[in-house]
Image 1 (spheres, helix red, strand yellow):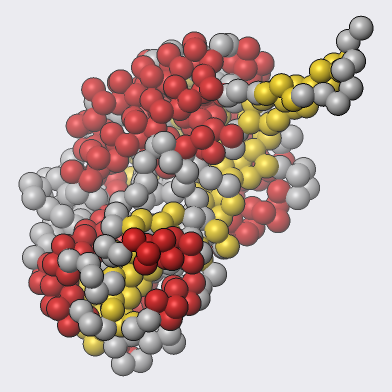
Image 2 (cartoon, helix red, strand yellow; image 1 turned 180 degrees about the vertical axis):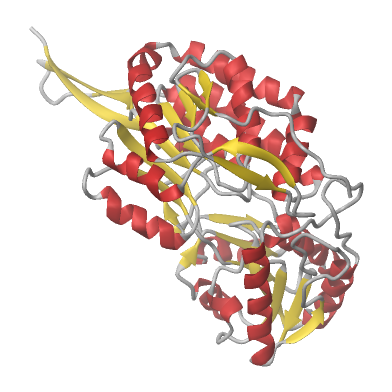
Length: 484
């Protein structure tokens, strides 16, 4: 396979200029499908983050004073440009991240929809007038942008996840310093080109690429950064909570998940099996809300298992740029090694592999693991206790509704859960009983810009998207006015 490269800018964007790292550092970006180098980007550290923070702090007063309607024009134009360039951005995304081109394009369109949603919703940052007890006073609650926002996003959705943070922050008048994942900076660079062309003023949106810890040090040390929005692992999220205490810095955290998918006997077995396979193997299972524990009612467990195995075997695995590919590579060697370890652990404890189960030897290079289905799963297996982030589907049986609710909730995570049933009473009981921030009932892909997204328990704090996603970047001021 020929090595492909990308044409996007590979420099940081700080204070309205494309710039190199202050120390001249660079980082090579790899295509996970064939381990070829597709670009080399500027790669710095704390000093680069500090100059971006300073630029954002300088730009904040003026951007805050711009009307919500003018800010909306910039965001709406950004969305339009992203749609116009969706094929190009999607190709870049597939090259650096590995997911199939169709999935990549859908992600870019979701990100564009997110910019458009918050362009409109930013006009609705309403305050309120509160009836006074003393008629010599008037009481108001008004909204105020929190200030400079630092965003830290992972590699698995390099378009969608930054858009959920950058768009609402800019919509309400905050300024932004964004740090993408080391492995996937090119997609966000493409998005920044759209944002710049749409008219974002210098300093309002800044992009830094560099070492995670030094950049985070700058974010936490500088009091100009009033909020950090992070998507990533629960372990890192806990460290950010600890570090936020020194300046009582505001946080939004979208952390790990271990989502149950629960199938009741009245559901259409064949249709649900297809939906389950799509939900599980989308982005190769490398999705925070991907179903990772499959509880199937014992009345249909046999038929469901057969249908799932058949659908999994039929998946087309290959380079995401090839037509018809449904599953691409894993994103790096560490992910491949972890997936192998999870399956080996399950095997050693009695799990039965029904299909897949190992690294694919069809490809000379790249990080390939076969889509895998296992049964005879027990609670002692690592795949039942750790966030798997892997193309492995463990199947378990259940018999009673209370039993499956308890099993589904028996985890420190609470990001997402899925239920398939045609019984409205069962649907309501599950919606009320499951401890998860996002619940899809007969819906394997529930995320959408107008609805809140986030987790319970150790899966995070705060919400993205929806009205709640806008509120995350606002302070509420109370004003009491005495009158004559």
